[in-house]
Length: 282
Image 1 (cartoon, rainbow, N blue to C red):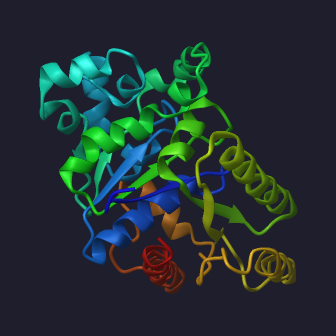
Image 2: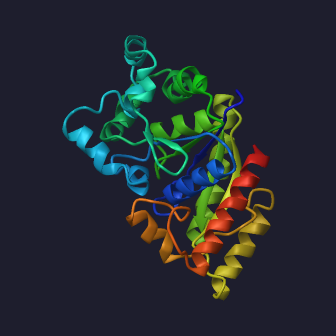
């Protein structure tokens, strides 16, 4: 691995706060002085673009067919020829400035058909290493300090590419029994993938999302996570806060929203603390 740190947010379940986690940890890392690139692989919804208020501009590009190349392009055989033809513009033309520090390569509708295409590649390493090759050859020369991937909420060839490329997995979960089982299954999956493909994948941070310290049930599940994953649980929980959703609807994170509530302020501080810890663990 190079000096560029990599991580990917993943859990084989939607709605656990992966995009919120990537957006807020990405901004927190920028606040800590890191140059950060966020890459959205989570499908045509392009939620990270919406979270940073660049979706309208990007959707216009898509409608006008001025969205080539895009993140789905880098998984295809012709990417090398495209990059050679476009030079430095090949990667930079995909990027958006978020206005909050990180740069962003947004998701694209072309990702949705990519799983089937990749499945036709018989060679396992060629199938799963395409994103890693792209980051190593074309992104790392741009000298970002941190590349953070928002992976699909399901196990498919795109998420396997993301895991292969990131090696370090951040798992946002809610304090509930189903999420605890999913996190446990993920840990076993990471071990299996590491063994089968001879790559070192590790669960680097388990981040408890949408916690409510006022309920006994939440407290019990939090204790369960801490007992099961003592080395992986993030130092700070992210409290349930309507302000997070309100900020996303306004196309920003909590770091840009004005006059935050007490809960929002605690969430913002928690993201900062967890970003500091993530750097240490990597």
